[in-house]
Length: 130
Image 1 (tube, rainbow, N blue to C red):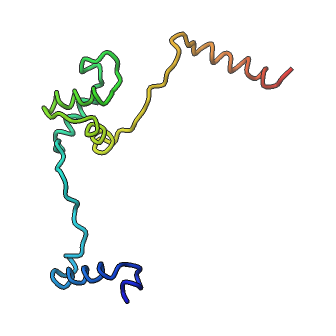
Image 2 (tube, rainbow, N blue to C red):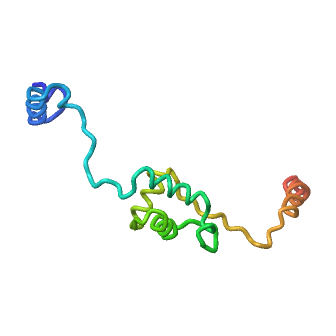
């Protein structure tokens, strides 16, 4: 009857009641999920954060652009721990709070002053029409 009232399986209600009878309310509380502990502890993550904040060029890379492979190499260099690409991604997005960002591609020949002049003088004339 209780199972139907709350829209659950009767076996779940019986199991919860048995757990409650054996351990009380505290036995019903959600426990932290178990699983493999992270390879890097909090201190190591902060060491990695500081190393990444210095930029990719500070670690000998030609361009100041981070890739999973580069971050993995830096992690191994500063902590001695080798991480897979997936683990590097989880480290960056989960524990460091980074997000995927692609560099904006711009022409080398781009002339900002000429663009500003065109927007100020030519665009209003084109927009108004003949």
